[in-house]
Image (tube, rainbow, N blue to C red; front, top):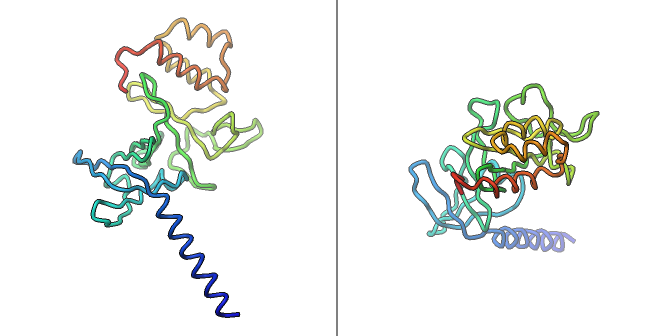
Length: 207
């Protein structure tokens, strides 16, 4: 019986090891000296990737990198940038770039129950009496937080104040602004609106 237990335990160890190795993908990191270092990155697609990076260099040396040592990294087709969390003064995380253009969109996945720096001007995360305030309005995921950036202005997307937020970010496009005022866009049209704005305002875009 004990032998069977140890065999099962050993099997679980090998399965876990193989699983972890299989999730390492080619990528690179950029440190604060702007040195680009290629290697393998553990691509777990979970909340940990927004806090730290499991990295193997060309020699096979493993390390765990944070925002204190690198300013961005790329694995597969996903690029993560080090940014300071809005409404905080010294809390840095990695944010995944989701839309590039004059307006940029980033994604952040927090761990369930994770307390983030800053009070977001009194707003709260997750479900409340009005439904999901922060999080993807389509998937209704309170742990998936979207951020918007333009001209170094970096803000969390508060879906409850969607129109008020977008008035600031698309104010230089009068046609789209008028459509927004006429309620032609809802919160679920957010990504469509950003894409449309970027297509219409490519000049000066930092891609």
